[in-house]
Image 1 (cartoon, rainbow, N blue to C red):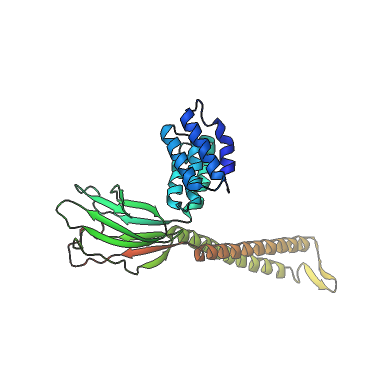
Image 2: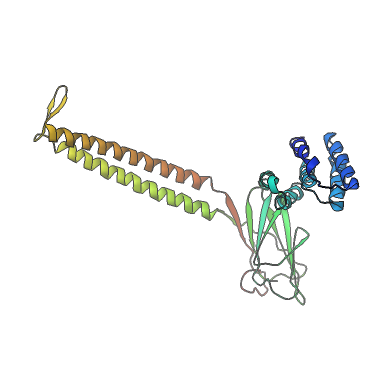
Length: 299
């Protein structure tokens, strides 16, 4: 019941002039969801939306499918609702992002998306052939199939991992119609944009640390230069004339600034290291051409 009660409280105003049939189905869905009968509740919300679409109904429908464990379906509903939700778009967005962390993204590169008659399916779903296809999936093995007139079917598999992107680089119709190309082991690479940020922070940090050391050394030199011309050491501390006191104070302030710069540099290096080591990994898969003709090296 995590969120559905909060969703439906505001739903009474979702219909400017509600269809009696859609409203009745919606109320039935609410009651069924409160009783934990999510399968029947989803059916009622689906039927209500077919009669008359409402944001509140869709939010409840997404919540309902999440309770049934259909994470991908719930995610897509929240994404669709986000574009129509108006004041509740932020809520729909947050729900979608929470579910996205439980899904794996299969990325398929397509070398010639305008090939006549080209059809691509991922996990049994037809997808539009574009240069790069991003498709979210429940964690597990996913089958990618490509077909075109007068070409043998190409088939490969990839593993969807929750919270990660699996990149599949498939050659164009390199396999025979019956051949099943098993997913190679591939390699894991840290997400490039996170690596770039980590390197930038680390570089700034190292520069700041060096700058802090330089400033500190200069401050020490200025401090020592006051002895014995303007200052002398005593048991209670330095005794200086007016210029010496001013220069000594400036040197101490400069030393403090160098310390601050150095500490900031250390913090930047630490932040860069943290971002690098916690960067998500992409699974890079390159499928070898099994004796056929590969066009442009990508499908």
